[in-house]
Length: 203
Image (tube, rainbow, N blue to C red; front, top):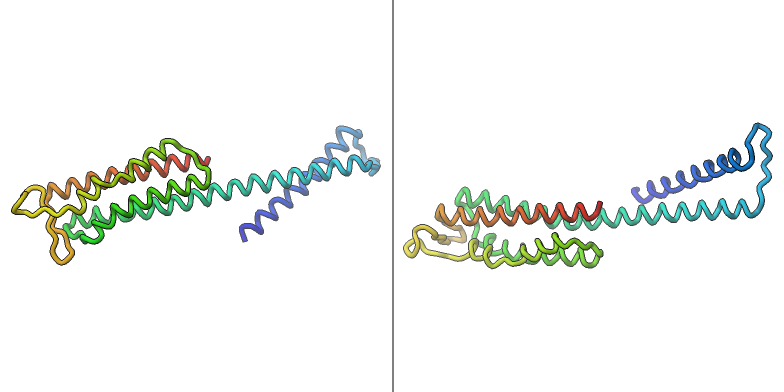
């Protein structure tokens, strides 16, 4: 349906170009009046047709470029939104002391793979943005995120920084919970900045 609407738009633009070109030719070049004679040379007809074809081609190219940019941005935004959603979920679970350990250990890998996916999409689409690339490289360095989310520390060994696991559920000290929240907030900040940079690149 969207492609069909685009075709209709291009056809309407073509008709308008024909009308405008005809009127300009009549008014400017031939001193148009009510007794205007429809005597047009073959050269004028060819020139007018070439103008229409060129206009339609340019309209098609511009529209295709816009659609491609929207598609690229949509793919990247979907990846970022998925990460942001899981960040929020983990933060809520940490706050409630109800974090699933499997989710905790899987998230850092998801961040790493998603960062790589976004960079691959940008590279294949020819989207160049140095700041977004820098943030993605930073985001892909997940060692600290992995450590704070998955390192098991027993309460007896460190009463302040413990994170114990029982039946796949985490029991987290307030201090460790604060560390996790801070790290996840940093990840979310980078994700929002990447989103902004890519959106600005496509304008």
